[in-house]
Image 1 (cartoon, rainbow, N blue to C red):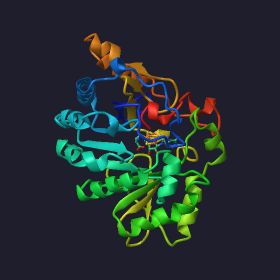
Image 2 (cartoon, rainbow, N blue to C red):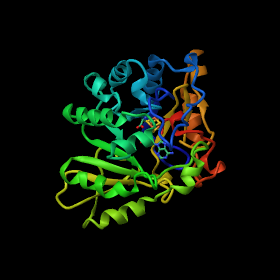
Image 3 (tube, protein in one colour):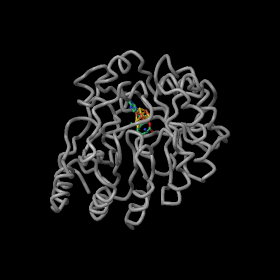
Image 4 (cartoon, rainbow, N blue to C red):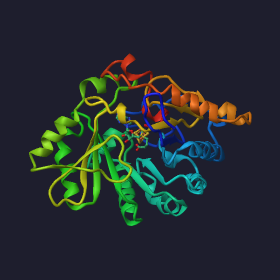
Amino acid sequence: MIDQFGRRIEYLRISVTDKCNLRCIYCMPLEGLDWIKRNDLLMYEEIAHIVKMMADMGLRRVRFTGGEPLVRKDLHTLISLVSKIPEIEDISLSTNAVLLSEQGELLRDSGLNRVNISLDSLRPDRVDAIARRSGSFEKIMAGLEAAENLGFDPIKINVVLVGGYNDDEIESFALITKHKPWHVRFIELMPTSSNLNLSMNNFISCQDALNKILGLGELESVHGPRGNGPAKYFKFPNSLGTVGVITPMSHNFCDECNRMRLTADGQLRPCLFGSLQTDLRGPLRQGLNLIPFIEKTLQIKPERHNLIKGSEEGSGGLVALSQTGG
Ligand code: SAM
Ligand code: SF4
């Protein structure tokens, strides 16, 4: 699958639900959202069918995301279906890890290869304040430990930089990589219409984060772990893990974009932001051939996003990343 700008698309991020057991301040409003109706949610067999169609066209890697993917019942059955598609070489999961210690073993045994875990602070009170659900920290740490014990590799930890909330922990996060083989990735906060104030007033760039980390000692630029997308990676001499930065705001990486997204209600989106999407659910349920719909989406993939801090227009019309699978 090659788009009109010559980019090869071989990666699909699949949101399996728009619901979540947390309410991260930069992501989802406290009161939740207008959830997708049950009938509009793609069934697991339907998702697997779409993946198979796209695999025939060149898709090689999938990631399950949400909302929180582990709140959807029996996610392991979907992993199992997708792991039987021979062209799919890599299956990964983005999770807040709250339910990972319960489900990790079954997910691994069903074919899940690796996990990205969101963890925005190393302090329990702060995790609770950012996630706005008390008691999350202990569960997330148990999930992280389970991921390690179950042999998921590589383990990537996503930290969204939020000024005043976690910017004084950047060095502590980076130091973890000296003795753990984890890949700690700092992500710049992206604007959505539900976080305009935060994205304007609490923004910290990855360059700010790197400057702090450089104060700890020398860093070398390295090739990232398996499945590396837009992150740029660095490491301290002799450290086991790496530090990564993901810079959607300060350094646009759209020219290397290799992905499309499938929402939980079956919309194929060529870009995380903006309003472009193609309905696959309707044609799928009418028994139509999906290839023309997939090809059309590929051809309308925009050259780049146009995110602007604190701007409704510059957030590409999204209320929250949880709606499209961040
Ligand atoms: N619930 C899962 C989790 O938190 O990992 C998967 C879905 S979440 C939308 C995927 C990733 O998007 C997480 O790493 C989260 O921190 C990140 N994210 C959500 N909203 C964001 C925003 N406004 N700016 C930057 N990253 C964001
Ligand atoms: Fe939920 Fe993930 Fe959004 Fe946090 S970032 S509210 S865990 S979907």
